[in-house]
Image (cartoon, rainbow, N blue to C red; front, side):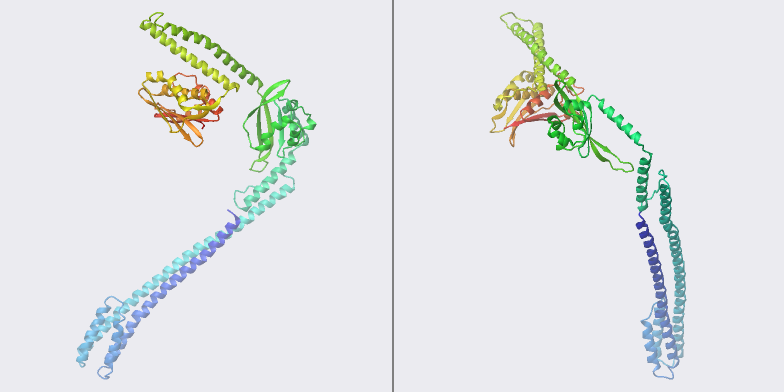
Length: 574
């Protein structure tokens, strides 16, 4: 708690205690005043009226005006009735007085009036005694309450008097002792305040100063130099190019590999602003373009091609921000960046060899597969000979396997085009209906086997799309093939074509089992298949479809309601 807050609370408590005592005292004094006023205004006046009526009664036989005096005080008494039984006694006096006015010489009536007045006076005397007891009780309660509250206020004030000065003086005393220790070069001295007050902030600042003084006092120049040499040697012996810059983009270090690929000398590199070096060196300019333009920490790794060691080599660039937490502080501080180039040429060569191998094998597979399919056509020709049922089943099985091999071969050839970056596009105005017709006819036989029906819905007025007719038809064919494969028998597959702004969207919706949400983000990954799926496939179709659509400037997406079906859609320019 802040010292200012403590002082405010302490003074505020004293003020509140004075206010509470004042309010309580005033309240009880007011109660006592009310009790005494009740005695004076009500009961005392009744006694006074009764006395005056008794005096007037004594003079009734001798003074003719006594009746009017008696009646005057009787009326005043009738307006001053306040106690139980007082009304009845007053009424009795009035009744007897009316009878006395008619028979003034009647001594019995005078005696009755005296008795009535005596009873009236007795009632008020008892009331005075009761109210006096109430007033005494109120006074006692006031003494007890005010004394108790006063005692509590005294205890609180005593606690504040004892603790508040020590809360201020003790930290100052401790801090003074610690400063004396620091002055005597005892830099290990620390101040430990658990308080969150201004003294806590002061202690944190003091400890930070002490830590830095200790760090500087314990450091040795030879240790620093050895550590620097060790790091420089480690960096120079790394086989990957590394460049280090500070927060102002001044080059701090560069290893031999980086000098080799840039063709620069260390004296022309280290100590210079890297943007100045980049002005005269195209490779350095290409390396640091992300540092100059984006200034984002932990930039994504980027592959780049560099001519090094007499050949083209591939490097994976990674820029890492360096942040440290200075001694005694809590916030990290940016102090520079490290640019690392990892040589991935062997991996690129292996990847290229794999691509060439897949292309060669896939191309060589086409010839024997074509021969197999030609032989199947001859076997199915009735002019050559009639096959029995077992032979026909065998031929059908061979045809299905050869078609599957042909499809896999086509997918492998397509993936080699994608990996080699040699996708050839023939973008032109293509017929939407011909693209759909090709895909539907290609899958008509497999759909009929499962009694699946196609429902085609093309928005009115749409007829053409800017696309590569062959590759777009291949994509739609692949989507229909997957929809049939994962749909239930006797179901429907919807093919919709809609215009959305300046795009034409093709969508294929099935009513199969759908795709679990956790796999939707991976469905277009190469070789990925949903775990637990027993359906046939290479896991390349959707990946190739994505590459073909994106190569045409479009986008392919998927939405799935697990257990109810999926919708694959791609859009192309209208």
